[in-house]
Every structure is written in C-alpha cells, then in structure tokens.
Image (cartoon, rainbow, N blue to C red):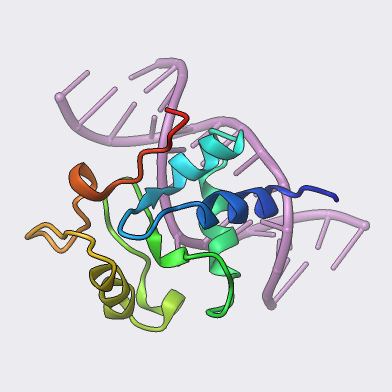
Length: 106
DNA sequence: GTGATGACGTCTT
DNA sequence: CAAGACGCCATCA
C-alpha cells in the first residue's frame, strides 16, 4: 500500500493509549519524519469525527489544543481529554509533564 | 496546472 | 538567552 505520510501519522496516533496525549513533533518523529510536525496537524484536521484516530489526544508542544473551528468547539476537545483522565494546568493547557505519551520504544 | 496555506517543530543566526 | 528562517507534503482556490 502506498504508505503516505498521513497514513503513517494516523497509524501512530492510533497507538496512543487512553489517558495519554502526544505532540505533533512526537508523532512525526515516531513516524520517521522529525520535521513533518506541520503535516501531522494538517493530517489530523482532515480526520472525520468517526475516525479511528483520537485526534483530540494530539496537541502542540506547548500543551495547547486546536482552535475552535477544528473540532467545532475548543471546550469539546478539553472535555474529551478530561473524560480520559488528562490533567490540565491552571493556564488551561495540558500538563505534558504528567500526561504526555511515553512510547515503549523510547 | 500553478500558487498559497496549514492543529508545528527544530535548526541557525 | 531570544528571535527568525526553514522544512515537509497534502489540500484548497
């Protein structure tokens, strides 16, 4: 199968365990493309809500989540993360120090 | 068919 | 230490 970068990104995001979050750069690096963080975000933006890819678990390096027009509501993504046990900082950002996904390959 | 854009991150000056 | 430029590739106009 023509393994497009997007397909590899989706596959990596799909491996994120519940209660953990990952950053774009992390997904890109695990997929074998350390400089393609931008494509990760763009790829996730094309994902339908019913996809097998938990795009709400993927956030930027700062722990901030996507703008409203991506999921429909910025609070919606935060709600899903809270439902999975993700911790947030007083800044309204995700506490990467506690909930960032740590791949076994590390 | 060409040009510009985009959930970002890392390297260099 | 901080700010700026580059990279990467698919989708939209």
